[in-house]
Image (cartoon, rainbow over all chains, first blue to last red; front, side, top):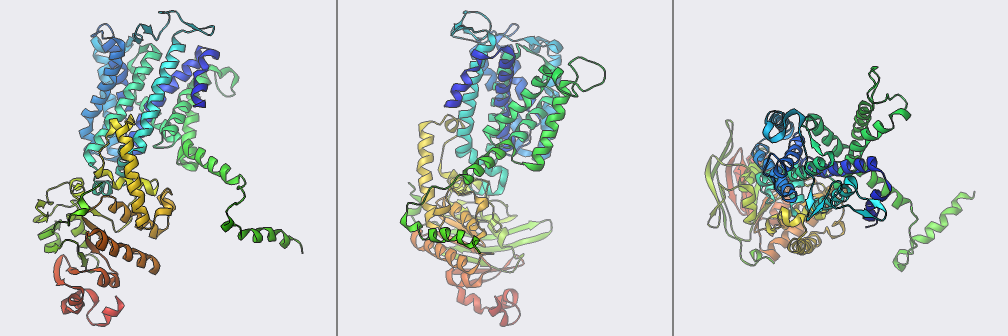
Length: 364
Length: 267
């Protein structure tokens, strides 16, 4: 609750640069939660997340824009999410048959296929140069600059400020639904599939159905993330949705800790914000060249990649359960270190004499 | 909550079941009948086909020939989750629990009895929340029944071997089964744990009226609990009868307990 209030403050204090970092992080977090559900909880390795993000982003852009049906943007956003889910559903027969690393390779094909389509289907995707994204409007309110002019508490609300609250709402929705799923019947069934398919089947879990459902749900979160990304970038280009993006998302959930919503969020913020921050502060960082300098030194983007490459190795070696696991262990340790409240139950009092007797042993 | 347990379980009938794995005949025309509310033990040396038999019963393995029927329903052609939904639950020889707490594992056992889908659970619709709460209460009851009450919210990974074995039993019970398949429920347990589990299994039969199929090497347990015993050797059913009959069967003594009567004491 307290956190929710804090998350509403940035638009009033921070400039567009920080808001954009936050916005990208929230979009990434939504996508990462989807992948965490699929790969972390259900144990299905996917390298095709970029494809479903692209489906959401381009789906929205086409459905809401010209050329395209030009639907009301809110409806287009909803349909784009469903479209991504449908794409996941279409792929799920493959997911139901192929396991582990083989599934990873099969999903890899999706990324290349998607990239090719984005480049060649000019009329829908705009080809290599992509296309601009129509802003989202909701009941006459535009999540973009102007229309209507809005100033809250003396702060002019431009596109970033408005999208921040949209992103926050969508992220809150993701957080709420994904945690509900994981703690409920479907989440338990998916975790059971990951740990042992035979045991899950014998417990009454329809294996094929749940494997494909995991794909559909994960793709829908990816689609939602894609819509938010498209709105934040204001332009979608094919090269963004490449294999590197899929790998980034895998990095997020590994760094954050597989199969947890909070972990995926933390990982998403880390992986998204790091390169942007390093670009901004490149001139103040040692060993990092300013962006655009071509003297063969390490640029901020590469440096960020080295850093989170290192972070993945460190996480795998020392904290296989990721940031989420680290946080939990730290919390446990603090709780243990805190002195226990004195026992009020008379049944617990007998050990006390022994405890008070102990200091005497120190005296010779 | 569940009317399954109020009626007597149907007869589980295995007829001439044959299973082959690439030339090896794991089960060769095995037949057995589990009468309602009885404990039927399947014994035999390692590799006799006991676990394969369980895999056929729970739908994990499709026989080359023969049928398995539960009442009027043929199980042989059903997927494992359908068989589970009919009230056939099993445990595994090697503990197979999922990550998470004892509660999570037991609630997995309630999967076939609950309905909440992805959308309802994600949106936390009142129906899904209510269902979860109701079934969690029943899972807690079952945990108490099997002596896991104190560990209900503990991660399974932190429990002792015996307790984890009991989690599997409790999880199977969470299906409110009519037929319970127990694959070596006391293997690797110490004497006290064995006695405790034997007690629980005995209670299940008398109080819930379950049919229980038991694979077990502990002959003491088999002799104490079983009403009927089927002896398998190299995939063939070599003897069938009450524990006393089987114990005296010369074929069994030779194949299972050793060539002379000393083997009986060793077992």
